[in-house]
Amino acid sequence: MKDNKYVIGVDLGGTNTVFGAVDKNGNIYGECKLKTREYPSFDQFVAAGCDCIMSVSEIVGGIGNICAIGIGAPNGNCYSGCIELAPNLPWKGIVPIVESFNKLLHIPVVLTNDANAAAVGEMMFGVAKGMRDFIEITLGTGVGSGIVINGELVSGHDGFAGELGHVIMVRGNEGRLCGCGRKGCLETYCSASGMVRTAKELLINSDKDSLLRKKALDTIESKDIYDAAVQGDELAMQIFEFTGDMLGRACADFAAFSSPEAFVFFGGVTNAGDMIMDPIKQSYEKNVFPVYKDKAKFLVSELNGKNAAVLGSAALGFKMFS
Image (cartoon, rainbow, N blue to C red; front, side, top):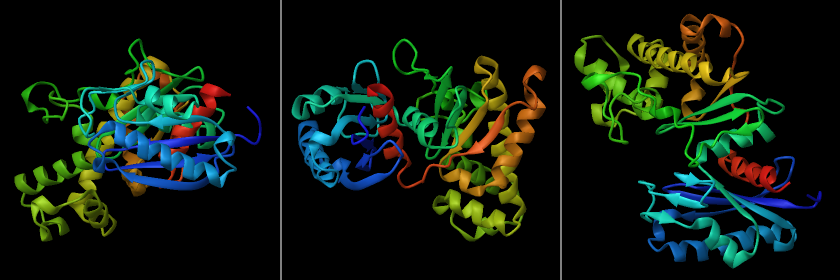
């Protein structure tokens, strides 16, 4: 790949889709944003996306300086080049996004899911630079993950490996119902929305005083829990302890299949800093198989939160077509 080449990184989400031109140093030149749900027709979305790509490309000297397009999307399958059965996108079924963009722009296109894109971005531009074995865990509305072993992203035989957010942590009917239809998945406890569910359960089932009681139950957000914890609210701090303990136990299990050098955490929940990271580390060391003790690093992503998904998608393009 020549030094003057760029990759278009595409962060395709249920609300917004963001396009940006990225160089090999992780600099982003211009961005273009679409409201994903304003395009109920996939063909219309692709046409608007191509316009965005052309517009962003002009900032770096035109489409001739774009060597690849990397797309991170929910349920993105790296093998088929399709978005498959994504529940939060307006296009149902199997959507051939790689073929569609490639046909119109005649540029190599690569696709993966959003959490895998974050892991590749971390490996190229972030705190995992130079690492060959690590697990990226994204803590947002759900819990996503990207697993890197021997310097390669783990995709599995069907392109959907690494859904660690759907490891069952609480067995039986006691587990919380997950959007995937099962009960007790990690993301029902350790995502931002999972923390809100914990808060509501504690507020309903205890008489403990809390700043959170000043808000109606159905209006509580994860930031409210953080704000209360910063002020020393005992119930809010209990939520972080519970969440961190469960994440630490999950990571202790994950270590058994890849012995990672590091766990890298990304997403809004990590803004709590030591309040969430300390209980994760303590729980991990308490529960991990002895041979793995005191070996793994627990790191917070260094990628800029606003542009991280664009960087991750672009890194995928650099990795695949360099």
